Image (tube, rainbow, N blue to C red; front, side):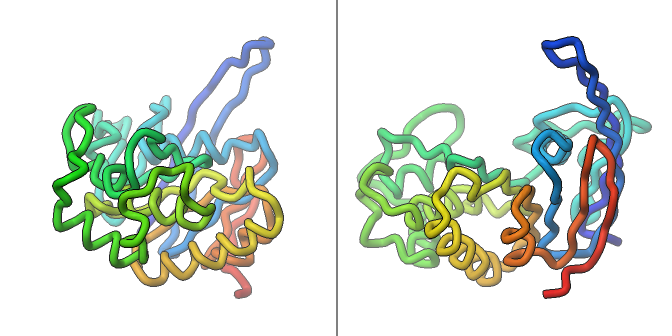
Length: 229
């Protein structure tokens, strides 16, 4: 059974009156799957449908054999029950929390801030795994780009998700930092071994990450192929 099995349809109306129809379907065993296409192609909508942040009109979403959405059987798991880690483009770290608190936030129900004094075992594990122990008490504005990325990734992984979803993680960075963080994220993903779906319009991301590439244009899958790398 494939790691990724997605077939979703969604009609959306834009503010200018134009309509956009998402109609994508693909299945893949790739541990590192990249959705590639121009801005506005429907990549982010597809990722949000997988994450449970967008409800399709019809179709299904299955990850690692688990049905997360199926319009035919009325299955629609809430985002927090899908066990999918979603890494936002800007990492979305809390500026008022330390590195350790940011990582531990996912372990606390509701909006209660984690204690600065107490450090759960799971938090300590990811601090060690991503070599962030020296920065555990620092705030996001005291971190380098790579340290922020590792902190966001540790927070995404602390609850043991079944897969990792990445929304254009390098789009807002300058060229030199993109090269460095691509290399670092690729190594971290290999280290952790979790399946990953990444969306991008940058061919360099495809070269760095893709075991398989799904091309998307105008809301449709236009190509699917294994990476030459």
